[in-house]
Amino acid sequence: MAKEKILAIEDDKDILQNIVTLLEEEGYSVFPASNGIAGIEAANTFLPDLILCDVLMPGMDGFRVIEELQKNRSTRSIPFLFVTAKTEKEDLRRGMLLGADDYIFKPFEPEELLAAIETRLKKKNSLIADLDEKQNQKTLASSGKLFLKVNGVSKFIKLNEIVYISAERQYSSIKLKNEKSFLLKKSINEWEKILPADSFLRIHRSTLVNSDLITKIEKSKNSYYLVYLQNPEEYFTMSRRYATKVRKSRFDLAAE
Image 1 (cartoon, rainbow, N blue to C red):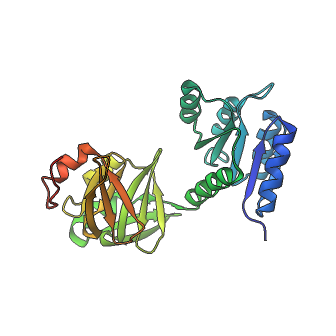
Image 2 (image 1 turned 90 degrees about the horizontal axis):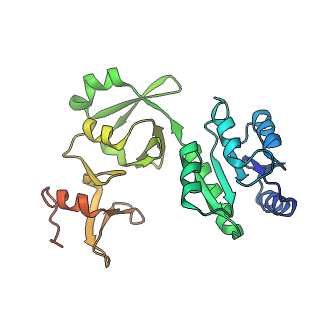
């Protein structure tokens, strides 16, 4: 059974063929396109689950490709990875501002490409939800439940089921104890205002964790703190800025 559909846009025939062969061996359905115009047509036709795109291409470069795809509601949310030899900071920033999710730099190892694809597809498969603002105003403080709208249907989540909330570019991801996750278009700053401060601890500009699930906080060799949650494989780096604030909370951190 084939995995997700991947569109590969690359003008170098050898590189394109190598990518197609690698991904097909992994079970993906691959749609190759040798230029930007063909890539846009394929994206609109097949609606792939992920797009790989070269930056430097004749006629229409990768930046133009992503600009055009962002104009279409059907293609704007498709994970988009640039595969490129360009490493200038200005080019990287331009691509991210246009909506690219990641960069893979040539030459790359097969494992590197596959890992990047797998990571992005996992995020894509997270459920997109909206916060039920009206319902939460009534019940969040009193019942300890967060109400979401998933595909138009209201769903509640107990606050103690949330493990952490992390920023995902223009979205934030809510990770639950049962391994499910939801993506919402809400910033970490907004979550910090909504969630009770005695249950959720901000440890980084992009991360809030459930403080009741913290098992230990220890100082690393580089003077940062590592925050461990109940799952032994789940830990986060706490920035110095937030370590100062945490010292004033119920956690006893040694001074640096």
